[in-house]
Image (cartoon, rainbow, N blue to C red; front, side, top):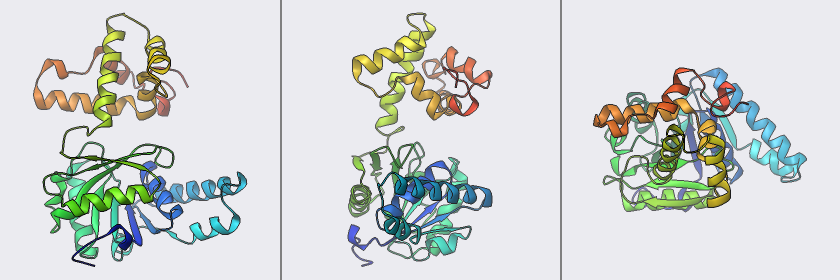
Length: 291
């Protein structure tokens, strides 16, 4: 098994980080029949994750999407813990979903590498930190990749598997096939590129929206309507921005500007204004729209 990992070999999954993405990914894994550990160092975060999972199971039963027995089976296959070693020591596949800070991730990856079985693949759910920046914190670089789920992970179908130069074909293939087993639609990103596929496309649309708004060409509402009713997008770039967080967009744009020093990469004035006002979108009650 150690020589050749196949998707059929995955019986147990560990999800590291029990925040919004982590607890949904863990719930998903348990629902698809995997014994799953959801780990976080913060007890309050774990409590929220447990509460979410319990509510979700109850709702699925009420909506007749699951029988009581099925829900009970799923409940018995998901374990919450504050102990990293306990979470990963028997895992075949590990998904990291913690804070987007490289040093913190590297530290966690080296500990996972120490505790997890030799055959285990370690994936990061990061949407912009590429796995080549984490792989050498382990002794299994070829088994480290990006497996990026979209928020909310229980609903959104897309999963991006990113095959950096260090990632073995086998690892990429297993991650891709695991995506299918989790009832997702995986896509293979053959090169590490900033933003991967979807975020690059979304950012291009969002930036065009910012420009049109800043230039007084059209209102936020009308730009969103154009994308929904003309291009068939489920929501326009501004509504989506409110959902994902204006602070996150600002951090990404200012980060790119600092790296390149190119004025074309500087955050747009309308974005800077919202950020300065602390209007980050849905989570603060106001962004481009009021909630």
